[in-house]
Image 1: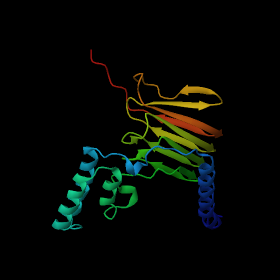
Image 2: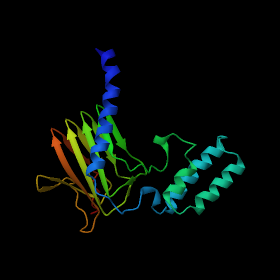
Image 3: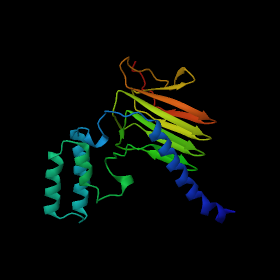
Length: 214
């Protein structure tokens, strides 16, 4: 049974992901928002890349000449895309200091996640079918002050890790329910989760409450 399952499960996952992307692309309206690669880089982002270069030079993956050349590129870079190119041959995709993949997140019979320093597009499509999608926003860059997550859950789950000061609400069947428990400022950024739910679950993980000083 296990051998038979191992043979068809990867093909089922691949087919499901392809169908989900085609369906999502067909119904998504065109957006004028800049692509993640076009967003302006911050000094903190440059320092992240510089640290990777320093480690690569220290263990011999970069010569001194290569290190100095790439470091010059880092401090001259204006966009996240320019920065991301500097380390593309130094680390595997899941370990890159900047993750600019704005494609939908799909989990079919497995767990799929986005974490680290990644760009959350203004509208993100998430699908979980007999699987779990995890979105860690604690170190992410929100492309918009209000982010919309279109979640299709079919016997699957969506897990969202949020930093302090970020509000998460769920919109389903015309009703809006606040999922974060801690108070936020009136102008705080908001993640709006719109669900198409067939026996699915949404969990929001918040940072521990700060103790008030007496």
